Amino acid sequence: MVLTWGRFPAVSVDPVEKKPLFHFFPGSSTFSLGAQGCNMTCPFCQNNHLSQMPEDGPAMNHRDSWTPQSVVEEALRCGCRSISFTYSEPVLSLEFALETCAAAASADIPVIFVTNGQLNSSPAAALAGAIGAANVDLKSFRKDAYRLELGGHLGTTLDTIDLLRRAGVWVEVTTLVVPGWNDSDGELVRIARFLADLSVDIPWHVSRFHPAWRWPGCEATPLSTLKRAFEIGRAAGLRYVYCGNVPGDDGEKTRCPACGGVLVDRRGYRVIGMNLRGDECISCGQRIAGVGFV
Image (cartoon, rainbow, N blue to C red; front, side, top):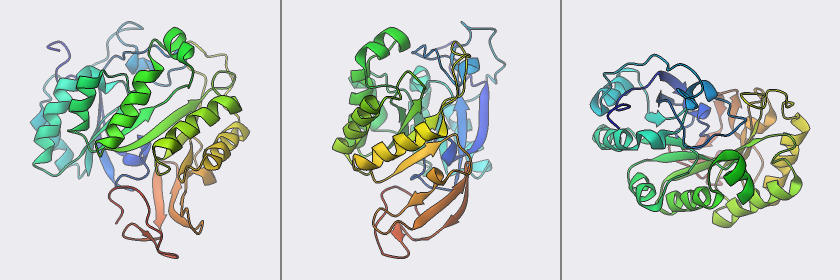
């Protein structure tokens, strides 16, 4: 912990949609920090230059002087509505993140975790009591794939999603759809049904894979595959399913689950229009699940 405390080579102000979080203060900015390292070794990692360092290459430059309080002060200076631990696996900076949560609470700034969900029950419970929102990667629904190819445990991620949601954390889930690996109808159906059984209001982001790291020869996810995953999610009863990494696609929009009208219009990570009255559809009055709709 001493070697990594306060060291974040990746620091940026991002749209909260980039996490991706579409139902948590949509259209706002989040102060993002990423440390080096990860507790998994996904061969298709889309951010391996950070998550697999320093094992996979030279260490990146970083600022050594971040403290929980200075993170909060910088987020306020930048006009950010939240703070995000993201880009790599924030569990490796858990102690720093929890102290940041305590400092941020007095400033009314919620903290976001973008995580693979590989936490034991005790730290997961501590995290659940501190953060406001999380996007959890659910990479597959096969135990052997998690154990043998990713270096993790499927059940741990499933338990983390359930624990965070039950604790009142706003949870969204992302599945990077990799051709030939997790894109079968059977696997996508199992993921969608698991989420729907927890809550039909959990947003599910099915995101496009681009060849990376140890799988550079794979094809990018066909748009038809993402559309199929989208329809599978809707058929399972999920009210909010999104196509990720496809700027301009209709699957980026938040639609009313009752009347089908566009409630939040997006292009890429940018919100370009809202048709809401508070957290209700302006056309039919249907309440929309989430936090921070204004």
